[in-house]
Length: 420
Image (cartoon, rainbow, N blue to C red; front, side):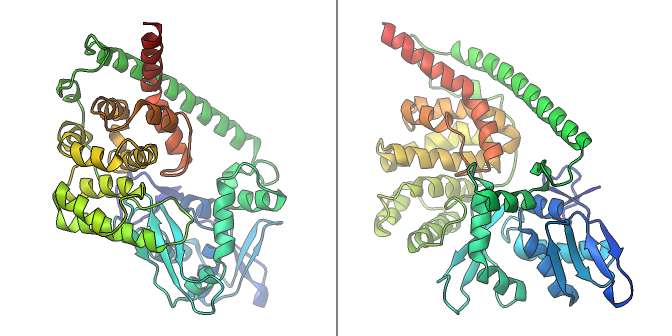
């Protein structure tokens, strides 16, 4: 049985799911304990270390806990039924997982303060969906534990994205991601078969998507003028659909909240709250002395979308890009790093606010190219490498698959130009 990670959200089509907690009682008398039998899967679903979840159960229930990876036992002293544990988990998710702004669970921890200091600093939840940084309530026992063991958390987070872990790192990663632990984690042959079938179905869906995008691209090419450039009109964009919810981003996961990031954060909030003109935005960037920071592009594009309540990719393409072209071009100034950050901000928007319209991403890229906002070289370099820099790697791979026909079109146009 699966549940919505945010159980206050009753939408049956809610994207973020977790398994319902399962538990069994072990032992007798004073030695009786509750074993949370699927803690690995629950922790993986909410993207938090097993230690954090188990410690929270212990703190909330006033009971000692024990975590043993060798036997895959996650014990809490006393008898605790699954429904009770599920309610406690909801409290943990609200405090330590959900973004306080958009209530999305796509968050990671950022630590602000001196790690080796006796004084506990701040723990922020960095939301990959809306870009907001919201503070974890400090003073709780678990918050103190997380702060004290932040290096362990950051190393585990880094190991989840690394393909060259040492043996200890691999063990910790396997413990934190049960469905990937095929070698010794108790995964049955049927589980492996199901995973292989799911992968095959995903690949087949990808092929179908690629074929459809190839057709879409061919239709777009019919609108190319004699110089092999797309006609600069909105006709080809009018058949797009609508979707919901996203704001902006600051930076990739697992990095300290520097002074510069705080400035970028304030810039994003100022744009969202004040709805300034492009001229005012440019003056603000100058006054903050961050004109040379490429990350302003990622912040600005997402903050503007939130400020102007651009709720569909159709509106984004037909009005938003044209309206703000001047400031985009002026700030980017033909610099690849700025173009990359711009595409990173767009990637987060598509992955969050416009996810249901992701099939339209190729048309957005083509428009940015035709308007001379993003160069051909940057498009090729950005979309030919899969990265977890702005969104999860799985989503990054999915978006690059969608943009593949555009990449092929650009390469072909370049070859044709060389031949001429």
